Image 1 (tube, helix red, strand yellow):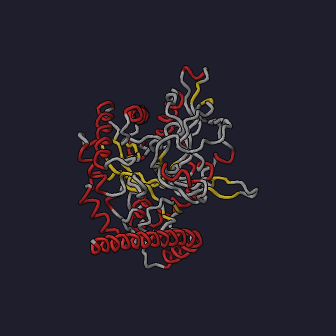
Image 2: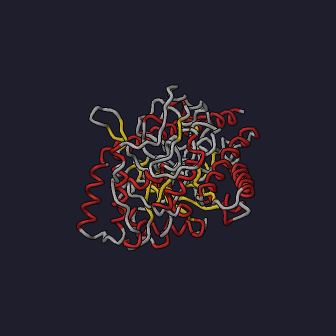
Image 3: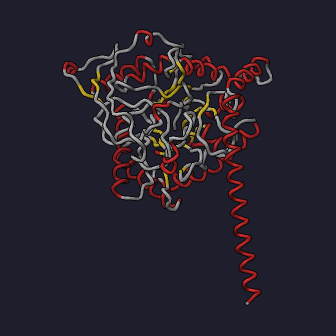
Length: 466
């Protein structure tokens, strides 16, 4: 995925407990159907886009700092549930949210047709994601199609469905091209146990059917987790589930997301993605979304023009350029090849602004949805954490400004310097964590080698005495 570092998600996105149902009303300007007089109950959608804590790390998760954001690699239900307090959602917009934070850029005014947006809220109904995308000046967007804390969710209401169609038409969003819903973190298509595998498949298929009802053609999801099983077997199960889901639907393309490389996660290498695709029967129904932070964490460099070209050549040779369908645009708080999934704001992390200049100026990426999952949580005047969506609005404009910009210009150098300065303390903190862990691992390795040496020497002495 993924995603901003909201502390409210750290307790457990993977919670089987039900949340309170809200009343889904049509958003302002949404046409009412004949049945709109009756109140339609719709589950509030979980809008947090942080990724849950890995099952293998649950015991130590409480000790993690709020900046950490590990990948979803474990079984559902392994984390502590969130507060039992119920919350209600409503489609009624706050007055301050009615004014756009930035105007949407007309694509044909850009030197390259890059459709940049963010993972926006769908609270109160999927139709609200359209207005929330417009609010930040986005030309593409992602959303969750249902609650991320439940296996079973009510269907999209007729009002929400009608609203999504009418608002996408009103705002000229080609949702079949530039909307990229994100799959549930609960789902692990590599699951071996039949009951859990069936549960995962049912939830996955439900999302694909929701996509098709909305006219959405791309669906992004995390490949899965081996749970300690043989990697080839787990990959085979993923492909088998995809083949089954493709036969049960007709148009949606299942888009595999590359991962950062933690634990038993599948998709950390281009080879993993290739191996899944090779087993998919209908190749027209599968694709890949490259998450820039995940790629960098997994050891694929994007920073210099030469490194970027090398990485994309590897992708094209191993997976195939035709399978690339979308991007998640995130800088990285963690250093290269660290296998830590820590999203940073554009230009402030170890990837840096030049990496995103490389992406924004690559002609082959035109027309693809490019979705921000960068942190937007900030401390308010009262000390409470609030979401500042102006950050996304500004980052969209920043990325658009990189198209055609000269990297030797004073403008680019000043931007790069300012953004790197903003993220300096966070980079230093994470680098220190990585260095200390490396030293600790090296010490353990040294002690283990020393013990093996002693055992070998003792065995040799015993042989000599015989």
